[in-house]
Amino acid sequence: MSRRLALATGIALLAGAVAVPAAGAATATATPSGKRLHDDFNGDGYADLAIGAPPTSGAGTLRAGSVTVLYGAANGLSTARRQVLDDSRVYDESTPTGYGSDLQSADLDGDGYADLMSFIHWSPVDGDPGNTVTVNWGGPTGLSADRDNLVRLPDSAWTTGFTVGDVDGDHHPDVITLANEYGVQDGYGDILYGPFDRTGTAARTGTFTIDTEDFQTATTIAAGDVNGDGIADLAVGARDSEEPDSRKTALLLGTSQGPGAPVWLKDPNGRRFGGEDLAVGDLNKDGYAEIVIGHSIDGYDSDVELPTKGGALGIVYGGPNGASTTRKPVWINQDTPGVPGAGERGDGMGTGLSIGDTNGDGYQDVATGLPGEDLGTLADAGSVLVLRGGANGLTGTGAKAFSQNTSGVPGTAEKNDRFGTATALVDADGDGGKKYGLVVGDPAENANNGSVWVLSATSGGITTSGAFTFGAATVGVTPTGARFGASLGD
Image 1 (tube, rainbow, N blue to C red):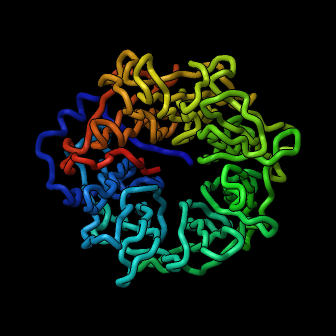
Image 2 (cartoon, one colour):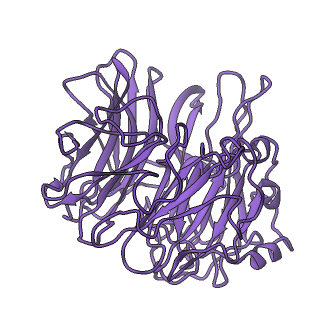
């Protein structure tokens, strides 16, 4: 998905420490704008950044998650314009939370303000535990402090994520969740078709099944227009329930009635392949979006033998019928010519995928984290790769690597930092989406307190000039164990 955020320089961010609104307070009423940005929560024409902090339970206690929103302006983002949303429900051993995870945005109710969605793991819904997607509604003063639940899965089911896209072509975004139910053969998806009303009720609902032949567990999902017909298609990752180490990816083309039947994506030898993360975007500017598969875990081959250890990206090119019949899928890894580094077991290439044009050439690029990358003797210090799209698709040419040991990147790499767990490519200089900067989330930084880094973009791509970082304490979130930056809103 495109990410259009106006990010401040490090100087502007530091200046934002003055006159900060109280955590959770709404921003001042914005001047309405005719622009429609999917991540502009207050409708002022500037995109905003949502940062999730979903802490894990520890020492027998459970903690509410939070989301920090930095509101954009002509001079970019500043912590002086922020809103902190937290999950104020009462927690006990039976009701852990995931508020602040899997952040995504879209204008669900068609009022011109983007709304923010988060996934909740076993939070209380109508007095009982359940899995749900929750929404904070956008408006002229920012996001609503209260939230509504869009969908609740049955107690016998668990879900593995959701995505947003117009899968029926009616120009209203739809919310698609993945579900797996105990005792049921196939993973399935629930579809909430927009527009939504302000209670979270969808115009209609639907479902789809991942597979009808094998026992499949749905694992990850992304949306984008793969066949160029103006309707979003779904890429769904799955694994064989009877062979847990296997991974597969299905493509479901969008139609006026919603997603069609799943078709398994295959390599040139006819073998199915998949991974743990998915992103969809047009990397070669031909009008058809590509499916980028992040294969980050070593120890299985998902029917395809990887060319190296340490993870890889699988690129399936789009075409008028879905997956291209003229361009073969390819693997890109740290042994691909031009890609910095070398593949080593546990690097985790393929983690935290994001797509955006980082140098303004009109071709979308791909950022991927390698949170398990070792830097010298520092195990799992982590790094990020940015690979360039072009007329020939995604290649290693011009690829760049960034870590906390890269000159100009604030901080110092340490063992187990896992820098690059989350990434987002965003409109870092406010130029209307021509060049996208890099935001990196590292929830493991400083003993799971977490931090976020911002690197801007130039015509030469991502640069460390003016890079800055901040953590939970800067924006008023209790830092201890916050896992700040675990999710970056897109």
